[in-house]
Length: 108
Image 1 (cartoon, rainbow, N blue to C red):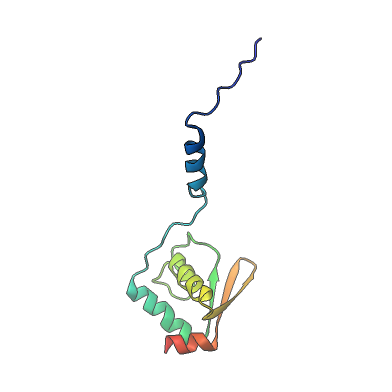
Image 2: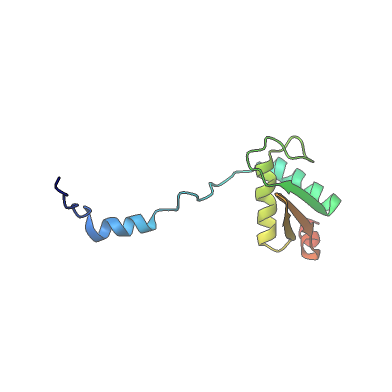
């Protein structure tokens, strides 16, 4: 049996450059959250000072806010964490978010 030589990839340097610019397959999609739901999440966080979120973006409902999808709560709190308004602890597939002093000032 003869081994066939592989043909070089077509497109050359431009095709390789485009392949490098493509987003990774596991990139997160953007989530649009209604203002009503965002307000409910922020009010609950301000009232309690802490919020627990299960690491399950496919969960239909959040465990404390039954009418809001878990993914929406995860994304709002991740946004607050990146702005240092909450601190995040992760333990046994649960995120724990604690409101900081800057977060209290922001939510007022």
